[in-house]
Length: 62
Image (cartoon, rainbow, N blue to C red):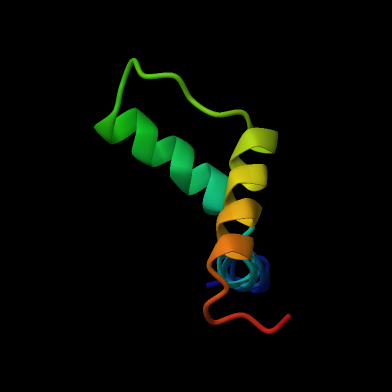
């Protein structure tokens, strides 16, 4: 595996851990399990996620 491939893999891992891929994962889930149903915009997705975390603060640092 080249250095570039390792860095790319490491960057993807960091994005996954930080939650940055959550919207991409949501889109993939919707396409696979709920085709034809409306899909939230990225802004709506993050707003709902933030609101849900505010209503139910479980394991988070802040």
